[in-house]
Image (cartoon, rainbow, N blue to C red; front, top):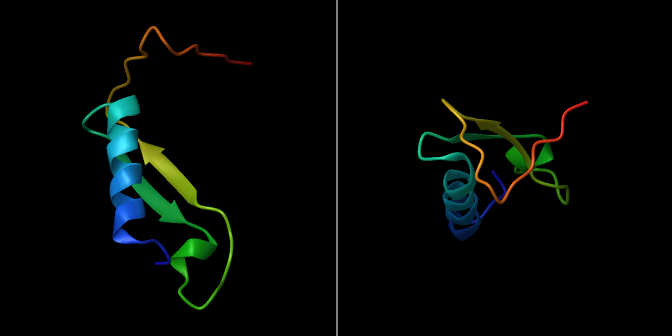
Length: 61
C-alpha cells in the first residue's frame, strides 16, 4: 500500500470527524499495488449511521 502512516491517520481522523465514529475506509485502485506509481487515492467510505451536520448540504438527483 503506497500511503504513509501519517496519510492513513489523517484520512481516518477526517472521515470520523465528518461521518462519525463508526466510519470505515477501504482503499482500492492503484495505491493498493506497491509496484505501481502515481495515481489518486480511491477510498470507499462505510458508515453505520449518518447524521448530516447543519454545515453540510445533501444534494440528490
